[in-house]
Image 1 (cartoon, helix red, strand yellow):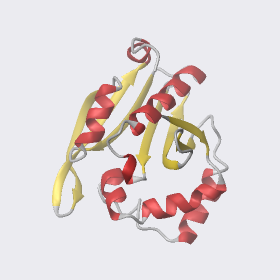
Image 2 (cartoon, rainbow, N blue to C red):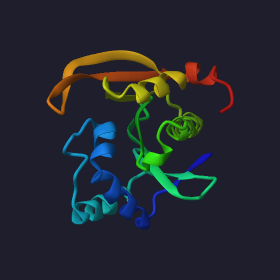
Image 3 (cartoon, rainbow, N blue to C red):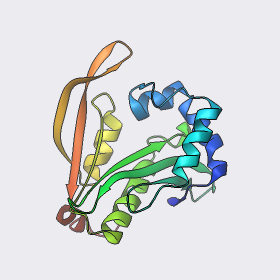
Length: 179
Protein backbone atom coordinates (compact mmCIF):
# COMPACT_ATOMS: atom_id res chain seq x y z
CA UNK A 1 0.00 0.00 0.00
CA UNK A 2 2.70 2.52 0.98
CA UNK A 3 6.46 2.73 1.05
CA UNK A 4 8.97 5.13 2.51
CA UNK A 5 11.79 6.40 0.36
CA UNK A 6 14.54 8.97 0.72
CA UNK A 7 13.57 12.58 0.26
CA UNK A 8 14.42 14.08 -3.16
CA UNK A 9 14.65 17.71 -4.19
CA UNK A 10 11.66 17.31 -6.52
CA UNK A 11 9.50 16.49 -3.46
CA UNK A 12 9.64 20.18 -2.53
CA UNK A 13 6.67 20.96 -4.79
CA UNK A 14 4.48 18.55 -2.81
CA UNK A 15 5.60 20.02 0.52
CA UNK A 16 4.87 23.53 -0.73
CA UNK A 17 1.34 22.52 -1.79
CA UNK A 18 0.59 20.64 1.45
CA UNK A 19 1.92 23.34 3.72
CA UNK A 20 -0.21 25.93 1.95
CA UNK A 21 -3.39 23.85 2.15
CA UNK A 22 -5.37 25.03 5.22
CA UNK A 23 -6.92 21.58 5.78
CA UNK A 24 -3.55 19.82 5.75
CA UNK A 25 -2.07 22.46 8.08
CA UNK A 26 -5.06 22.10 10.43
CA UNK A 27 -4.79 18.33 10.81
CA UNK A 28 -0.99 18.06 10.64
CA UNK A 29 -0.18 20.90 13.01
CA UNK A 30 -3.45 22.24 14.47
CA UNK A 31 -3.06 25.28 12.26
CA UNK A 32 0.39 26.15 13.63
CA UNK A 33 1.72 28.99 11.48
CA UNK A 34 5.23 27.49 11.75
CA UNK A 35 3.97 24.62 9.54
CA UNK A 36 2.18 26.80 7.02
CA UNK A 37 1.43 28.73 4.99
CA UNK A 38 4.96 29.04 3.65
CA UNK A 39 6.67 30.57 0.64
CA UNK A 40 8.47 28.66 -2.08
CA UNK A 41 11.70 30.31 -0.87
CA UNK A 42 11.14 28.97 2.66
CA UNK A 43 10.56 25.46 1.31
CA UNK A 44 13.74 25.74 -0.79
CA UNK A 45 15.74 26.69 2.31
CA UNK A 46 14.11 23.94 4.36
CA UNK A 47 14.86 21.36 1.67
CA UNK A 48 18.50 22.41 1.54
CA UNK A 49 18.63 21.50 5.22
CA UNK A 50 16.45 18.37 5.03
CA UNK A 51 18.50 16.88 2.19
CA UNK A 52 21.64 17.20 4.33
CA UNK A 53 20.27 15.71 7.56
CA UNK A 54 22.49 13.16 9.28
CA UNK A 55 20.47 9.91 9.59
CA UNK A 56 22.02 9.22 13.00
CA UNK A 57 20.11 12.26 14.26
CA UNK A 58 17.12 12.88 12.01
CA UNK A 59 15.64 12.23 8.56
CA UNK A 60 12.64 13.09 6.42
CA UNK A 61 11.14 10.44 4.17
CA UNK A 62 8.63 10.62 1.35
CA UNK A 63 5.54 8.42 1.63
CA UNK A 64 4.50 6.92 -1.70
CA UNK A 65 1.34 5.04 -2.61
CA UNK A 66 2.55 1.78 -4.10
CA UNK A 67 -0.59 1.19 -6.16
CA UNK A 68 -0.28 4.41 -8.12
CA UNK A 69 3.33 5.29 -7.37
CA UNK A 70 2.42 8.83 -6.36
CA UNK A 71 3.80 10.92 -3.52
CA UNK A 72 1.16 11.17 -0.80
CA UNK A 73 2.94 12.37 2.33
CA UNK A 74 5.99 12.66 4.52
CA UNK A 75 7.31 10.94 7.61
CA UNK A 76 10.22 11.94 9.78
CA UNK A 77 12.20 11.28 12.89
CA UNK A 78 14.22 13.78 14.86
CA UNK A 79 16.00 14.22 18.16
CA UNK A 80 17.42 10.70 17.94
CA UNK A 81 19.35 10.30 21.16
CA UNK A 82 21.46 7.12 21.16
CA UNK A 83 22.32 7.50 24.84
CA UNK A 84 18.77 7.85 26.10
CA UNK A 85 17.57 5.51 23.33
CA UNK A 86 14.76 7.83 22.21
CA UNK A 87 13.56 9.38 18.94
CA UNK A 88 10.56 11.55 18.06
CA UNK A 89 8.42 10.70 15.02
CA UNK A 90 6.09 12.60 12.73
CA UNK A 91 3.73 11.68 9.90
CA UNK A 92 1.65 13.75 7.50
CA UNK A 93 -0.43 12.46 4.64
CA UNK A 94 -0.77 15.54 2.49
CA UNK A 95 -2.95 14.11 -0.27
CA UNK A 96 -6.47 14.32 1.13
CA UNK A 97 -7.91 11.53 -1.01
CA UNK A 98 -5.66 9.14 0.98
CA UNK A 99 -6.89 10.30 4.41
CA UNK A 100 -8.61 7.71 6.59
CA UNK A 101 -7.47 4.77 4.45
CA UNK A 102 -4.61 3.46 6.62
CA UNK A 103 -1.74 4.93 4.60
CA UNK A 104 -0.44 7.04 7.48
CA UNK A 105 -0.59 4.10 9.89
CA UNK A 106 1.24 1.87 7.46
CA UNK A 107 3.96 4.46 6.81
CA UNK A 108 4.36 5.10 10.53
CA UNK A 109 4.70 1.36 11.18
CA UNK A 110 7.42 1.17 8.52
CA UNK A 111 9.24 4.03 10.20
CA UNK A 112 8.92 2.35 13.60
CA UNK A 113 10.26 -0.92 12.20
CA UNK A 114 13.16 0.89 10.54
CA UNK A 115 14.18 2.79 13.67
CA UNK A 116 13.87 -0.10 16.12
CA UNK A 117 15.67 -2.33 13.59
CA UNK A 118 18.52 0.07 12.76
CA UNK A 119 19.21 1.66 16.15
CA UNK A 120 19.39 0.42 19.74
CA UNK A 121 16.45 2.61 20.71
CA UNK A 122 14.38 1.94 23.80
CA UNK A 123 11.38 4.12 22.91
CA UNK A 124 9.75 6.16 20.19
CA UNK A 125 7.47 9.09 20.86
CA UNK A 126 5.17 11.44 19.02
CA UNK A 127 2.37 13.85 19.74
CA UNK A 128 -0.76 15.36 18.26
CA UNK A 129 -3.56 17.63 19.39
CA UNK A 130 -6.73 16.33 21.03
CA UNK A 131 -8.90 17.49 18.12
CA UNK A 132 -7.13 15.04 15.79
CA UNK A 133 -8.98 11.92 16.88
CA UNK A 134 -8.06 10.04 13.69
CA UNK A 135 -4.34 10.38 14.50
CA UNK A 136 -4.89 9.33 18.12
CA UNK A 137 -6.76 6.18 17.02
CA UNK A 138 -3.99 5.39 14.53
CA UNK A 139 -1.27 5.77 17.15
CA UNK A 140 -3.14 3.54 19.61
CA UNK A 141 -3.71 0.91 16.90
CA UNK A 142 0.06 0.86 16.29
CA UNK A 143 0.76 0.15 19.98
CA UNK A 144 1.53 3.67 21.18
CA UNK A 145 0.20 4.54 24.61
CA UNK A 146 -1.03 7.93 25.65
CA UNK A 147 1.52 9.09 28.21
CA UNK A 148 0.37 12.56 29.01
CA UNK A 149 -1.32 15.76 28.03
CA UNK A 150 -0.35 19.37 28.05
CA UNK A 151 -3.71 20.83 28.85
CA UNK A 152 -5.00 23.66 26.64
CA UNK A 153 -1.59 23.93 24.93
CA UNK A 154 -2.96 24.20 21.39
CA UNK A 155 -5.04 27.06 20.02
CA UNK A 156 -6.75 26.49 16.70
CA UNK A 157 -9.72 28.26 15.19
CA UNK A 158 -10.34 30.08 18.46
CA UNK A 159 -10.60 26.89 20.56
CA UNK A 160 -8.16 25.33 23.01
CA UNK A 161 -7.09 21.69 22.75
CA UNK A 162 -4.66 19.49 24.65
CA UNK A 163 -1.29 18.45 23.24
CA UNK A 164 -1.42 14.64 23.58
CA UNK A 165 1.87 12.76 24.04
CA UNK A 166 2.32 9.13 22.98
CA UNK A 167 5.14 6.62 23.39
CA UNK A 168 5.97 3.01 22.57
CA UNK A 169 8.75 0.93 24.12
CA UNK A 170 10.90 -1.54 22.21
CA UNK A 171 9.34 -4.53 23.98
CA UNK A 172 5.83 -3.31 23.14
CA UNK A 173 6.84 -2.90 19.48
CA UNK A 174 8.42 -6.39 19.47
CA UNK A 175 5.13 -7.82 20.71
CA UNK A 176 3.22 -6.39 17.75
CA UNK A 177 4.44 -9.04 15.34
CA UNK A 178 5.16 -8.51 11.65
CA UNK A 179 3.63 -5.51 9.91
